[in-house]
Amino acid sequence: MNAQQLMERLFALAGQRIEDTVDTCKAGDPAKEVQKVALCCIASPSILRQAHAWGADLLITHEPTYHDNFDRLHADDLVATEKRRLVEATGMTIYRYHDHAHAALPDVIAMGELEELGWDKEEFDGQLLLTLHQPRPVRELAREIGERLGIAQVRLAGHPETTVKTAVLGFGARNMLELMNQQEADLYISGELCEWNACEYIRDAAELGHRKALLVLGHISSEKAGMKYAQKLVQRIAPGIEPRYFDNPDVFTYIE
Image (cartoon, rainbow, N blue to C red; front, side, top):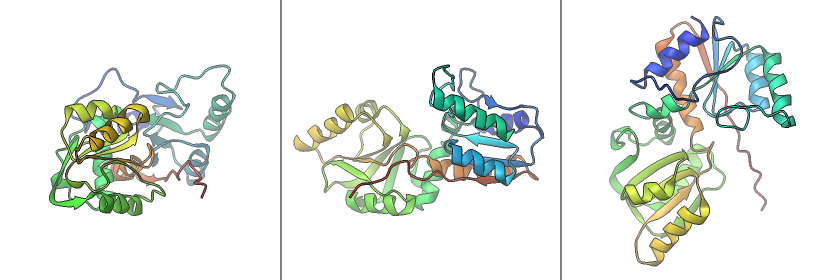
């Protein structure tokens, strides 16, 4: 099976083929025969080197490789240009798996996060809303998320004593202000957001007497378990091909 054939099978799990998509071949030959598949959330230089050393023929990444949503390379971008040389030196074929992962029912990334958290997937509506069988304090949920996802610092905004029955899962970078207005919930869980509107909105809500809260996890930290979960999908659609997930450590150093 070649790289393009494998990716077409993966995309098909969404139940639809998205035409206007970022899920395309970013490097290498789509016709390359594949024996080993590396998966990651974002293809940093360290991930590229690890995947190459392991012998990956295909690298599937959730996020862009060249700091642009469409992986456009700009002539004056020295870092991206140097990174492209590294990509070319590995000889790996690189595909992005983003739009089709989120379009699937249930959302592949969200399912991976729920599995890593050990939460009941039956409580999830497949795209956005989590309804807990047993309400829980927001501080307890925040601590659990930090511990199980390996997040050094989970940020909490809004009412700190919120009891959570319903939660909106806004993993990655979602328009959280829009979600807050569209979907009623006790808790909103975000990867990355605009602080001046979403965080201030939830603070205003709390100060006006609404028991609502917001947790901010970090973009990659809130999605990378989804690509770990995607290993199982590759095993299912391509028996005989060996997949391996490569973890992205936190990009930040926390100064105490």
